[in-house]
Image (cartoon, rainbow, N blue to C red; front, top):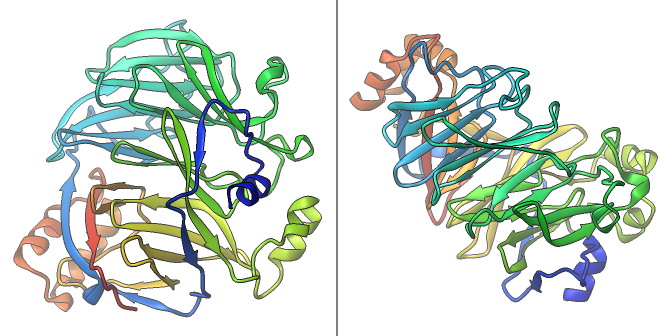
Length: 388
């Protein structure tokens, strides 16, 4: 099993990580293009966290959400180009806002990482080629030059040690990691590498890149290599193959992967019964939530880890008495998924609330929202036996 997986995803056995497959789960992916998920019979619990709105914390678009028992961290990479710190009730506490050309400023936010133990937030600035470390109060702790090319990062929980994910860019100036997708570092020292990629399939022009490679759930890091049907859990010491997406012969074949190029990819994507994992996924303590691509359309697969059951659906019927809107989750927290709800959409719903027979609490929440408010975070858990 391990040998097969390593061949499938090009795992480097010489890495300092220990590889395991003892708990791997097979996720059965079925065609969900015509199925509708009924939240009324599927959602177990829902609560909302409105993020405070004032002139000091105006969020344009949420790119990442991080949370622990005390704080919620929101990264807005492209619009506000700031990172915001809220408490668990949504009260604004502080922000990182140091955009500029100075040696201790950033010109862009390419990626972020949060260490809740040391209360540190790191910003990757690919334009200025540096990594900046701030505390939760928004104060700069240090600014380091960027020596590696990568697109995502995460703290392992072991001091300053980090996992870096590279989506196919050559680090030709460092031969040891020139064509590797996953790298482990601490204090600018290389500690590990794995998942080598085909050098002919590298660079930003490679058309079939994953939507993302790293996902975060509480203190766990999950990794899915580009175009892989596997999801791994990554820690400081080990990489474990946790989930295999079984497309039942309708995904990429072994022959496809041996010589995959843009022509092969586009040909397969035009087939009616070809399905592909596009890399967008979230994990919580009970479920894995996946996006599946079919002919440029997307449907979702929800997998129950305890009962090893999966269900696929394209549309969501938001008829639960405490749910009006629903979006794909950005992250997992305990047994909850977390989705941001746009205030503009919630505001439009105010005139239709009477049609839904909502609880007084939720009607009050929606009626308080203004069109230019910050997003509201929706935390929701699924029942152990959700229904379509």
